Image (cartoon, rainbow, N blue to C red; front, side, top):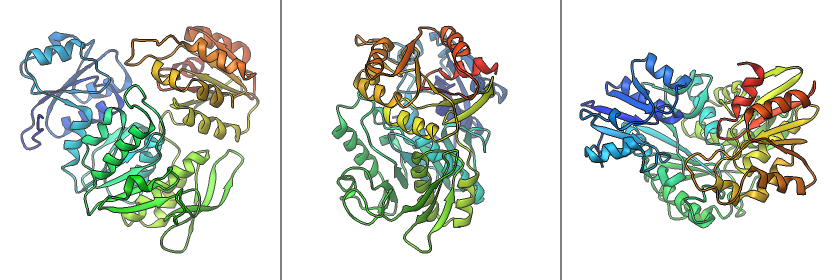
Length: 465
C-alpha cells in the first residue's frame, strides 16, 4: 500500500474530488502542502470552492488527465474498474489508495482520533460532536459527511490532537481506519449489494470495534440486539447508552434519558442520566426521537473527553442540523419545503415521524429511491415507511454505481404503496414532479424531498434557489 509521507508532500489526484468526503480530504492535503488535483463529472459548489483555493479540477474523467508526475491516485468505492482514469493509472503503474485508506493514514497523525459509525445517524452525530468540541474550545480537525453550518463546509483543520471523522461500513471501508475512540450508533441491514446479510454486517462492526486499542474506548448503543456479542472480547473500555435504564441484554445502561418531552415542533427535551450524578437537561432544536439518540451518543463522548456538561448542553441546544438532514429549504405559497438525506426505511420512518409532530396541513414526501439493490431488498419496508406521509410522489431510482435494474423500477414501489391504500404518484422527470406539486400542494402543506441522490433539486427549483 502507498504510504503518504506528510513530511514530504507529494502529488495526489482525486477521482471524484467533488464528493463531500473527498473534497474535504483534498482540502486538508492541499493545506498540508501537497500538490492536489482531481476530476469530477460536473461543476458543483464544492468543486468551485476547491478551485478558489488553488486546486486544479478537471470536469469529465478522461485518461489524459492522469499524467506521469502524479504520485498517487485517490479513489472511492463508487469508482468502477472501467473508469478511464483508473485504467490510465494502472497502465502507468501509479499507486492507488481508497478514500478510507487515506483517511486512516491521516488519523495516525492525531493523538485522539475518533470514528463515528452506524447504519444511520453518522453525519448528524458527527455534526453534534463537532459543535460540542468547537464550543469547548478544543480546536479539533473535523471530517463531516455533510455540510455543517458552524464551520461553513464539511472539513475543518484544527491544531489540537483531536480528529473526528465518520466511519462508513460500505465495502468495509471503516476497517482501514485507526481510531482510538469509536462510536457504534446502530446496526441494521443495508448495502446488501456488498454484505451477505445482517450477520455479515454485525461481523464487520465487530471487526471495526476490535480496531480500538487497549487504552481506547467504544461508545455503543446498548439497544442494538445482543450488543454484547460485539464487545465481549474487546480490551478497550466500553460505554453504553440506551433509550431505557437497561440495555437489550438487561444490563444497566451507562447513559439513558428520562422525563422526555416534545415541543409543538417535535423538538425533544430530556434529562440525561450518566455514570456520575446529577442528571442534567438537554433540549434540542432538531426534531425526532432519532436525534435524541444521536445527542445522547454525542454527550457520552463529551463526558469521556472531560468537557463541561453545561457546554455540552448549550452546544446541543444551539445545534440546528447538518445539511440535507431535515434541512429547512424555504417556504413558497405557504408550503414549507424540507430536504432530507434519508434513503433507508428506518431513516425514512424516523424523518416522517418527526415531520408529523410539526404543524402542517398535508404531509407530502417526494422520494427518490437510491440504488436498485437497496430498493429491491427493502421494497415492502420502503412502502410501509413512506406510507406515514399523506401523499407520496416517486422519482426514478437513482442508480449511483449500479447498472443492473434487477427487474424493478419506481413503478414497482408505487404499486406496493398503492396496495396499502395510500395516495402515490410516479413521474419519470423532475419537471413533471415540479409541475404536479405546483398544481396540488396548498397553503399549510409540508413538502419533504427525500433521498441520497439529487432529489433536493426539486425543492430548490420550486423555491428558485
